[in-house]
Length: 114
Length: 113
Image (cartoon, rainbow over all chains, first blue to last red; front, side):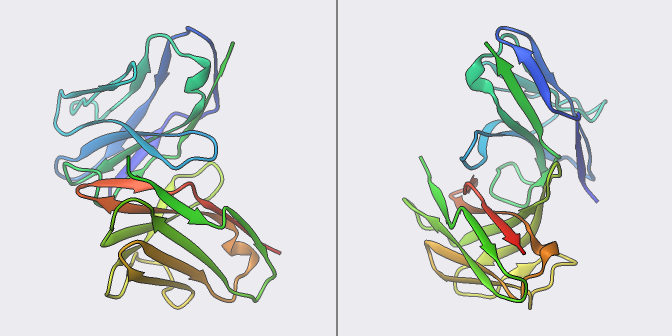
């Protein structure tokens, strides 16, 4: 079945550092890929998505490119802030939209220190 | 934006008792809600799909008689863990579908002693 693998955390960075969180997937067909963020005490929020190969999703300075050849969807940000501290989840769906069954990765805890 | 709440946020119960968790869509109606379970340092695992006015659809391996789901209105789904045991201790998360996007609640931490 479908699966998502994220890099192990936790990840600790200093403010303004470059962030990469790796995500690879296994799926039949052509899934859509998502990154969700969960701030303390809040529900998961959709951060960005990409629905086909070579698409780049971006939001709030975060980017991820759908790489079919490497089955990857790595999350990047050029300069992190303390407010980016959260848990990040990579996920896939067989639908273009997030409103269907999602398969999640394990989540990566990010802590950004001032 | 779309808001989903869960109640309680944390509950402790004794082994053998039942506990009910509520999931509400606060500013929209949702015919479909999902229930997930998350173990520490693990991914969210879909337990069941809750459809308003009909029976829930459970994922393979999820005991439907243990995890009772009721979606009696367009803004409320409940998950009842019956005869809870320590191995049911987990983080339970619900989500609600608004139009074509999925919105998540903040989760409920269940501890069974």
